[in-house]
Length: 250
Image (tube, rainbow, N blue to C red; front, side, top):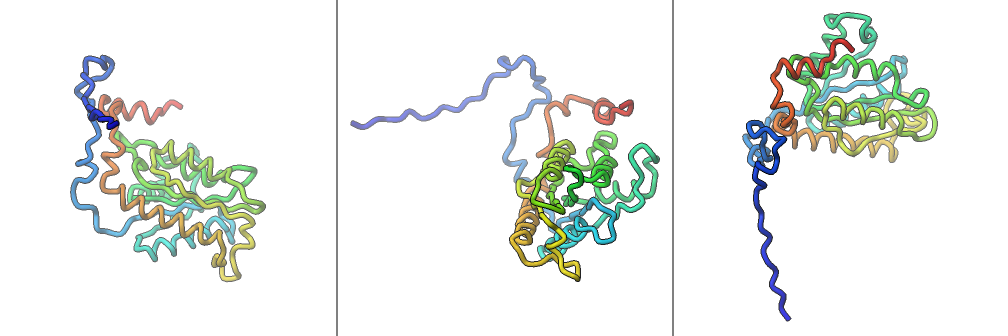
């Protein structure tokens, strides 16, 4: 017996069934806008942050190894040296190191965060750098829509505590945090006397993460504004959005 399947009927729900939605600001996702225009042809711009000031900082060495891989993939890279960065609220936003960090964030299309795990968490230095990146400048979020890759080094066995915390922060900063990540255990064994990472499965994983970061950056950078355009924020004026996000009294 032949069973005839009825075609699925697609329809648009009438707005009268959604009384809580303001029709003036409601939009259905548009595939054409995700494919609009020619993609940028300049190299992906990646900023790297690390979370230790030690002379032989393994989080910095790991970030430097990641930078080499990114450059080999055609990226333009910049580092922020956190030496001299003041604690949040202990200096004005005009402090030279704060200005430098914020300008680098604005320049970037993607970021790499590399932190040691200390006392079961990312370092205070890593958190301080992220805290100095504003959620909003006026109605513009400097980190919103940028891609993010996460790296961690540990002195002992493999752990993911710092990675998990940074992933939460990446989401809070409205960044496109890629699924892959790298945790390097016993980092003191992973680098040679020339401060280069030795061949290993851990090194291969770093290559995987950088490759994924570049792919996501190339895929999203031209449309990051549309990807992060939100109904709730279209309802707010720039002034209202700035007041809500900055929350200067907190």
